[in-house]
Length: 189
Image (tube, rainbow, N blue to C red; front, top):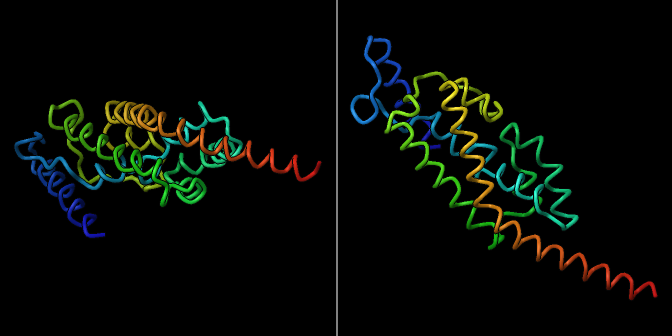
């Protein structure tokens, strides 16, 4: 809540420079961290960039719970809605999933920051897209094909970071499901 107006002001300052006929140069006159930086890149697929969790789950999960959660969460995640994952996993109070949930957005922030600083992606102006705009489309709209590609790379990084944690969680969940099935078989016998 506090950062939104400050980051929006940064984007508006960048736009004012463009309106004055200046070229935005990261590290000189342009603000790098803007509202688009936050909304379109560090909350990609929802807080924690959980779209990476969902894709990793769909790739490797054996647990019925995780498979179903991945399938049900994919469509909302494409619109940056990740409550099904946050509360369905749950990620909240889950020591296994807490680590990537915090690390992935931090890595994404560094990736985006340096992509802008080194001139690979242009600094953002005042153009904003609704927060529910799907990844890749939102990147393309605010920064062209390079920003869209940066979102793809960010999602790939998120999948790579979440993958070992999903495997750990899957072992736990799959073990619990096998134990529950054994207990049910014993009770019915």
